[in-house]
Amino acid sequence: SQKIEQNSEALNIQEGKTATLTCNYTNYSPAYLQWYRQDPGRGPVFLLLIRENEKEKRKERLKVTFDTTLKQSLFHITASQPADSATYLCALYTGGFKTIFGAGTRLFVKA
Amino acid sequence: DAGVIQSPRHEVTEMGQEVTLRCKPISGHNSLFWYRQTMMRGLELLIYFNNNVPIDDSGMPEDRFSAKMPNASFSTLKIQPSEPRDSAVYFCASTLNSSYEQYFGPGTRLTVT
Image (cartoon, rainbow over all chains, first blue to last red):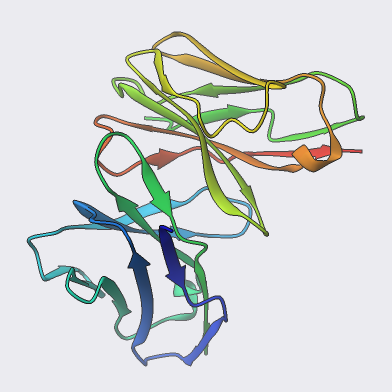
């Protein structure tokens, strides 16, 4: 069956360190992969989109990698700050109209 | 732009009552999505509209759920009759192209007692 897996356990890191979140998927061949941030009581906010022919994408302190062979994306936040604390969702666009979201990983950055 | 607007932000209703959730997408966006989010199931796509036309409603849980988009600037999601298991946060999202990033509204937190 088709599945998207994100680490269900919260990730706790110290301010200034690099946070790395993982998104694994099975039985999909996504044309794009996206990462969203969601704060409590709010809707998800788009962060980055990476296409299947791109290995890496950067935006300020954010970096996303996409390995279609491993069926995995890694999401990095460098020089993390307490304000980065949130839930991060990965989402796969597989064609047609559907974007499938993972359950998300909660990140806590301690000062 | 004001972003995607949803109303109400919170709704508490009794089982059996009709609930109507409203959404105003970002002006110029041609695709609109309704999602439901719960702790157990995460973010689930309920229905997708493209140019005001429902493309796929296979995510709509039951016949009790219906959605309309009478024009490019307004959509409703109706639950009739509501049940306690419908309690969730309902999000509306819009995008210019169904493959691009989606812009989510603030959500409606529905509680059915």
